[in-house]
Length: 180
Length: 180
Image (cartoon, rainbow over all chains, first blue to last red; front, top):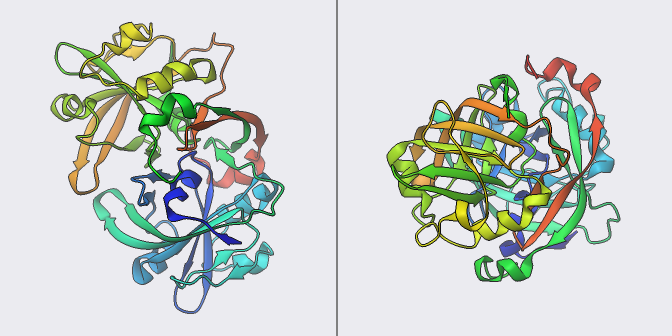
């Protein structure tokens, strides 16, 4: 995995892919599947919606750190599997044969098999709305990966795979943040 | 446009498409392009990130209503155009040849040319984070539309078009909300 400039990190979340979020409760790593994410600015800040209904939430709340990992379509069955069992009784790294890799700024691990990973600090928890505000402090991408297509959850058990890419950089030039 | 059951409305936002948000300041309709959205629950509540930097924000804040319209790939140049000019000096419905249609629960108009429209009430504005919390109160879909592929902004001026759909309903059956 290569370090990715933080000014580009929001472009991994902005398209709205299903992501994996790793946490660490001090001793044990866990992973959850999340589709409820939002870019908040280019620094980059992100929001995720989560709460007590996710076993990971307690570790997230206590450690105030997580990693957002971006899986691709070849990992879909692992992503769905992770989302349908609980860290309460399952070691998800072992069960889904994923490799935890220690990052440099946070305790929760990166996931080696993913296309990209964002080390994040919890900036705020808006309890009223179950919104956790995250700031990415380091970002990585695996440029050697052939499969780069992410997947988007519809929410009814189906998923949309990335199709073709359209370029509107000329039309948008005046509006793009610097560094992307 | 046909009415869509509100229990299915979150499935329009969950995949993370670029959306259009209409507002009305009492006299004038406006449209903004937004990619920073998040599902918050199945009722459905949504978050969008916006603030004073969007001309629409003042109307959204005052009227506490908006419509989220879901455009498809054939509308991409309008979507990008809407995102790169301001309602301050532009009548975007006229400029981009879009048709405002009055909804039943809110003042801002639906956009006839879009695949789907969600009438929304502002539930809360988390000023500290520029997050507006919306609740959809009515939803519509145009089943006669042939082009159903939405687009996902990368944030660097490129866009990803929906590709093929994968079905994991069996794996996810226990986790799906009722009604989807």
